Image 1: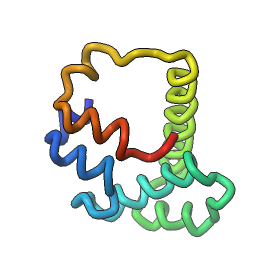
Image 2 (image 1 turned 90 degrees about the vertical axis):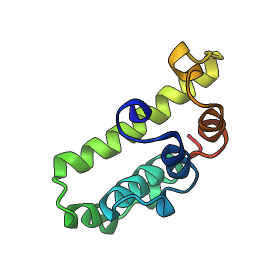
Image 3 (image 1 turned 60 degrees about the vertical axis):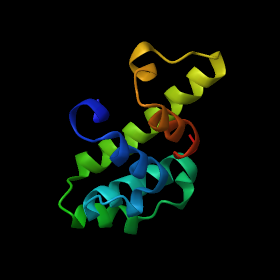
Image 4 (image 1 turned 120 degrees about the vertical axis):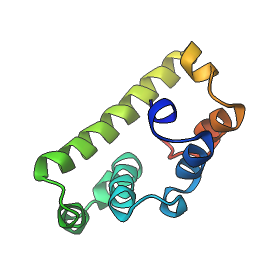
Length: 109
């Protein structure tokens, strides 16, 4: 969906491999940083992380959405990996460089 509706393949590769330097606005970088913490080190999340998103104008509900979405995606990815699921046709239609970045360059879920 992001590739089809919002970003070029090059932009998505930049976001996947280094979201902090991919030209995203500061609010999006902060959202990605919290999502990364949810996936990699949820115990390190502090009120300061939450306050940072609130300072950008996100509501408590939107912060909860970030946390729930990151956790759900991580869970879903682990289930697919554990079952050996194969990518669908939409994934296979992505540019080869983008597929490689999604496999190798993203946040470890």
